[in-house]
Image (cartoon, rainbow, N blue to C red; front, side, top):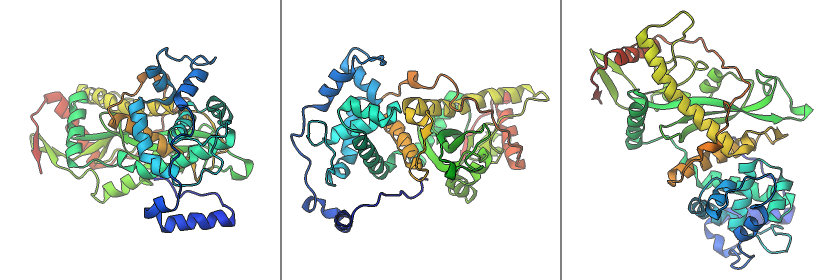
Length: 407
């Protein structure tokens, strides 16, 4: 997933304190100050008063919807996220994390600052001005939040267990008619500028942009169940797949290893995911039929159903990049070792909103494709076993056979 984080060097005395904290992490209450009880007036009251009528924003009139406009989630979900990272955000000295009035920042305000930075993609100066803090405070708070959520919220992005996978397969069959389908896969480019000393052909993609790739598999509810990021944008999606842990685990039989499904007539299929033309046709990754030379009615029906499921992943990426605009804007000289953690955090936030029963705002999805300006790559690799599975599925749509499950 994300590569190891690089942490800023600190002065000798501070380093000594940090080492002590790591050695006695379970005993943080004896080493660090507790969260201040009365640090400032309610941060939301102040923020709402300052920003609800600010020019350039189309803020809903009521505070409930206004809160979601600024932070992409309800106050209930926000409070849950605060509970996840609270210990980490109060377990270190404030180190200058104060507002312009000299008061310590509450955990809630720190989380709000970080969420606003990720959601808006605005500069640290602009975000700081909306909260009454400086640029350096926004930088520190955002990175602390990212580190904390990456550590505390991993359970919101994991490969499904057997029971959950049954629900996912049922969801894809009900919605798209695809039996035994476990997800949809896609990938996108996260654009960035790089200093001249860091530029290379690897990071320069097919459209001559510098970018980092994010590949994700989503379930029937547009929840990310697997991602890989951190790899350079010059890499083809088919190669990105083969560099992923998901590929290695699936090839070893540790992913997509659930029950076989009989479609009648002696035809049996295993679990699989669906992907676009950019991916190879494999026994467990099913791509659509090429239409250049014409296709049969059953193949056309298969392509139609396949497209519906595949677009589910496209919509998820459009929602992700539209909700967390830091991913859809061109990042200015990001630390390539830290950028994967930012990407992962946005995916975690996307999933947390779903898991908390909150609603994803579909209006925030990018109006165009999440990889606007990029032509779809074409992978010519066809595994004979994958071709057979696709033929079985096409015939299933043609004849509507009965389904039997085999362990």
